[in-house]
Length: 376
Image (cartoon, rainbow, N blue to C red; front, side, top):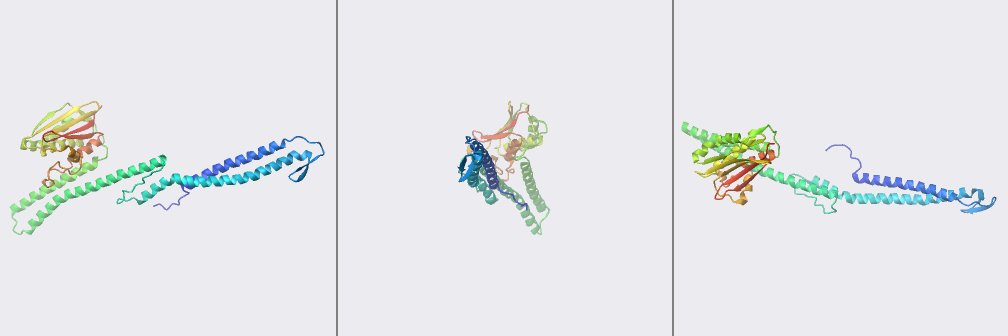
C-alpha cells in the first residue's frame, strides 16, 4: 500500500460543501434583510421641527428620527439573523452529515467487502437492500463482478486440477517404465526397445496435451489477429489429410459438401478447428461408420458442420462435451485424445466472433456446427 496521506473523506467533503453553500446563502439573505430593514424604516413621516420622540428609551430629535429608527431596525435584524444564521448552518451540517452517511453506507459496504475478499472468500456479497438508486446499482454491479470472478476462479481451479491429472498419467508411465527397466540387470535389447516405445508414446501424449493447453490459453477469452480471408475448403482438406489414415484403417467413409465459403481469421487456428472436429469424428466413430462435412454460406454466418455416426449421446450431456477433458463417454483410462478438442473449437470460434452448437444424431453420433462471421 502507498504511504501517501489521505485527505478528507467523501462524507466530510460533501458535508463541508453543503454547509459552506448554506452559510453563504444565509449570509447574503441576512445582509439583504439588513439593507431592506434600514431602507424601509427610514421612510417615516416628517414631524414638526423641534419636537422629540423616544426611540428605544432614548429621546431623539425629529430631524434624527429616521436615522435612529433605521439603526435600531438594523440592530434587531442583525441580532435575530445571527441567531438564525448559526442555527441554520448547524442544522445543515448535522443533516448533511447524517444524510450523506446513510447515502454512502453501501459504498462503505463495498469497501468492507473488497477488504474481506481473497481467493478463499470470493463468496462474500454486499446484498444491498435499500432504495434502487445509483449506489444500489453500483453495489449490484460489484456483486455481479464477484459472481463472474468466482466462476472464473472455480473454472480455473478445475481446469488446473484436470490438467495436472492428465499430465500426471504419462509422467507416471514414464517413471514406472524407467524404474522397472533400470531395476532389471538382465534387461536385453528387446526389453530396452519395448521400454523406449512406451516412453515415446507417453511423451507424445504429454506433448499433445501441452500443445493443446497452449492453444486453449492462446484463444480462450481473447481475440485473434485477422490475417485475411481463409478458404474453408482448403483448411478442411489439410485437416482431413491428418485424420484420413485412421479413418481408412477403421473403414469410416467421409462425404464432403463444400460451397467455396470464405471467412476472415487465423488460418492455423481455423485448421485446428477443422482438424479437431474431424479427429473427434473418426476417434469416436464406429468401425465402418460415416462422416458428413458441410460448409454453408449465409448472409451473416458461414457454418462448418461435421456430423458422424458413433455412440449414443444423451441430449442433456451435449453441453458437457465442450468442457475440458470430457471425452464423450470414452473411458478416461483409454487415453484417446487429450479431452480438449471441443474446448479448443469453442475457444477459437469465440475468438473469431462466432459460436459453436452441437446436437446428437438419432441412432448414435454427434453433429457439431461452427458459426463464423461471413466475410463481407
